[in-house]
Length: 628
Ligand SMILES: Nc1nc2c(ncn2[C@@H]2O[C@H](COP(=O)(O)OP(=O)(O)OP(=O)(O)O)[C@@H](O)[C@H]2O)c(=O)[nH]1
Image 1 (cartoon, helix red, strand yellow):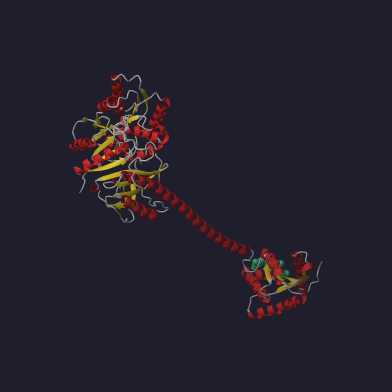
Image 2: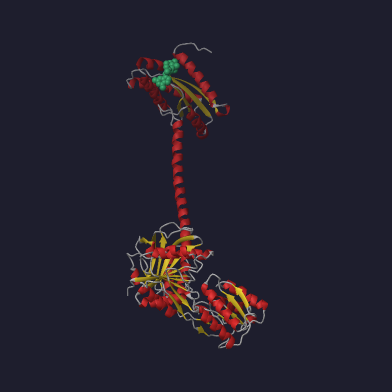
């Protein structure tokens, strides 16, 4: 079956009070007429409580073109919610026929129940059938016309029987908090109260639940009545006497009105018959305390494991949970934006990405991509919205991180289960995302660390090269003076010798070569001298060019060996000059100084001594007498 038209229901928590019955009755009637129901499940608009405000972001979802009709209940849109805000959020934006339950709003149809007659009848029943004369009355919120009608009719009827004076009256709201404060007061003040009239079932049930668990000596002492015939009215002990909303008839009227798109807003009042159960004193068989009737609709528990740290693991477990609970469909989408915090004017993110799909009772494998306009709820390319009779939309958030939404197909399946699973999806996906962010950060750090280590290694390699370069003479590739000192220290440590010789060598007549031939030839002579010295000494000896044409060699040699080397130099030079066919005569003078290691004051002293010897050698070569 296809559902061409869509009815949006703006509702607060579907498992509470009247909401579930409005939901199911509208679903049934709408579906019969080929209209799909899409429920946007939030809380009470305008509520200050944190969780309610976060939930209400779901009311941003209904968009023009997506839905054809709108229904808003007073639990979701109370009378106190300002007209301009209501119009901006729904009416102006959606521009479609709208019905409000239990309220009247300009431009909307309205369905209400005749709560005044029902309240009066309830009081009459308590007085005439049960002969109670001492009453306590809790009034609903002053801002709600529905609450005022109930309270006024109750108090007027009590007054008509002359019982108003003895009645304890308190003002509260529709919530359990107010009810518990009130029942405590009734118990403490005693006043022999016989019957308590609550403004709705939620407050009546909260009071009975309080008595059952915290004031067991008062079980059965008070007759209690509520209003609404909420889902829990039959589950509380004793079962609650209450006024019924004729939901089927109301839903039929609502759907007809919307489909026929009546031109003028209409107001319709429905009678609210009383459901006489045990709590007023009828059918007076109280079940013994402690039978632990479970409140709400959860009649059995399924303890599947739906906890995980990554998406894939989680989606497998979620599928099992959905199958176990018989939910027909579940579609999870994450906003394309980063998670955000709600501000006053936060708009629905434009796009979302479908990350999980469970359709017609089975998980659907998804390809990559699946980004779609958020307002569509599910991607048109994969699923046809017209195929779904009943969808429930919940936003996904955790603390103040809003990150996506889930759409349940509840044409089959219980609302309570969908709510359980929705809470699980929100908290688990939040954990998965935070865990992923954390892991990514760790990965990023590790990657950075690796790159940093590589860079460091590269850098220390460059440093080493630089250091080596800074120790070398560029022209000859020999050590320079700085390199000489460092290498000589190593030589001393590594040679194992305690006798060393420092040679000081100097080219002969370089100036002449420069002047007569060229500076380039002078360079050639220097390089040739370097080669000559390198070939003359051992690899382990330290050879350095320390000035223009001056060289120092440090070796682990005694004086005899040093003399032999000095002699060998002469023959080496002779050979070079013969073989190389040079434009100049290569001549090297050399002086040396040998010392025992322990006698060495420092290398500079040894160099000076070698230099002196060189000087003498030079003078001798030039046949000049030495000067002092
Ligand atoms: N081509 C060249 N010449 C240099 C270099 N460094 C220094 N000189 C020159 O080499 C000459 C060295 O002079 P000395 O060592 O005093 O004199 P010499 O001509 O070698 O004579 P003796 O040492 O007395 O034999 C100077 O003229 C410097 O300008 C160099 O790197 N290349």
